[in-house]
Image (cartoon, rainbow, N blue to C red; front, top):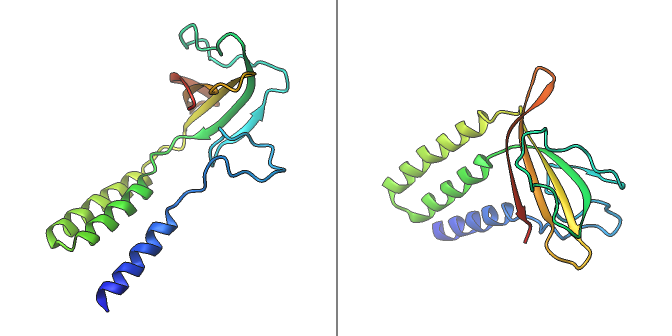
Length: 161
């Protein structure tokens, strides 16, 4: 009986952390598939914004033949709460008291980190797409909000595969 209760708990826990695929959009949803949960989408509407804060390296614009679609804005997060839940489930599933104790301590630390995340860190994700259906080109700028302005921290570029 005890094994069945643990099995049911693990199934419920695993189902609760499943995510919805990014491409599962409602037909009337104007949000593109590359915009993640928690981000706010700002379509370009034919306007290319000054988006590099003057500090990004050259070549961080979209490649030749790509069209600027817009940008999304979001708060940086480490997803420490999800990781803490996974550590807890795995440690309990091991049935080893030492591993359960270590997992509990690790999950407590991850939950503490989750509470210390700084909401002032904001990122801007600029997206270009190609007409031939190639992977979207992404440029993310990480900033820190202080004294009423966004201050540049760093940036990165990649193709969203």
